[in-house]
Image (cartoon, rainbow, N blue to C red; front, side, top):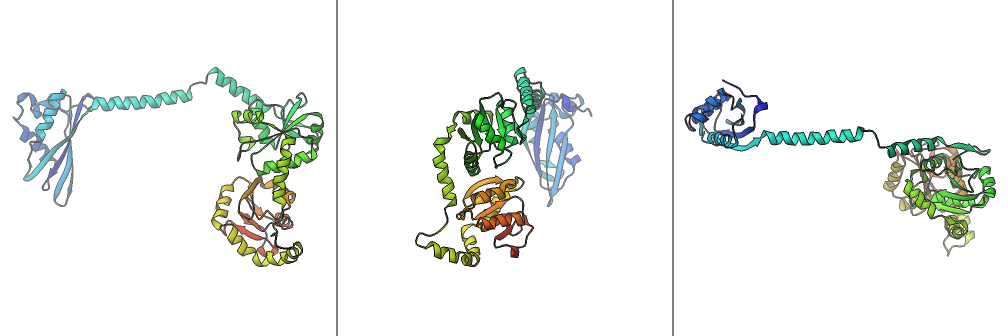
Length: 412
């Protein structure tokens, strides 16, 4: 019996079969040839079509459950469209297979060329995408990439404090001051070379000296920590202008468009000093009820901190909220500073946490949540600044060693 190669087939007849009993594959094949014999004339005789290779190998798959058999019949065809559907319709005349009643139903006649065409289209899309990704960049992209690399290499050290800086500090009339090395690198990447970093929140002497000779523009992150840095730098150096990154963003993560937009919106230091002092004053305002005398408050404060501290903590800051904040900080080496209403006053690096708490020195700091370990030094600074709660990944001190409420990730 001749077989047709699937490659030369044009159509596939997909058929479902249901049999009221248990039969084997040879029973189905025999019924196909036996019950269609002579039905369509000699030109469409299945046996002759197989011998000539115009009908391929008939595939039968059966599955028997609970005394009944179901399955499928697949017949490849290289006949034309009309002849193929006639063969398919002839299969539905089969009513018995072996001793059992049967029902044969043509599900669909599939044009293999359409399937192949769809495969070709999808594969061509994949190849085009791969070609586009792997192809050499155009001249502009090459230029931008090389220029960016050169700018990144231009970072230098400036002054006696060896601050990270761009190459144009001495030649420029105006200098942009940022917080750290990452900020300097980002501005250099986008072509801004008159930039210098402070390497922290404390103001180096180099910046103070530079402010006497140059027009200084302070560029800080768009958070509460940025406000504190503005105040600190303005107190010791002659700052002329201030720029803040968009709310919640840091200078090191700004795109080129955001940087240039921020530079165009710089504000004279005199215009913001008043607002800045209001912000700092609100942070430093003691939490004393207006109807409570100050002397009585001071006398009762130590007792109330011990007796009412934990109930106040439970009321003010939800455990789930603390856990979410701590999870957000994992891997960032950052710290959230919270007020009594669990509002985030600001976010600072853990390396600057002690200095920030000490600088604020206010009873309005209720809790500190940070990515790190609670040490004796941090606890000591927090106690002196009237912080009530420290939340961290773990603690190197025992709760009995401090008046603070120590909470670790395992407690949450």
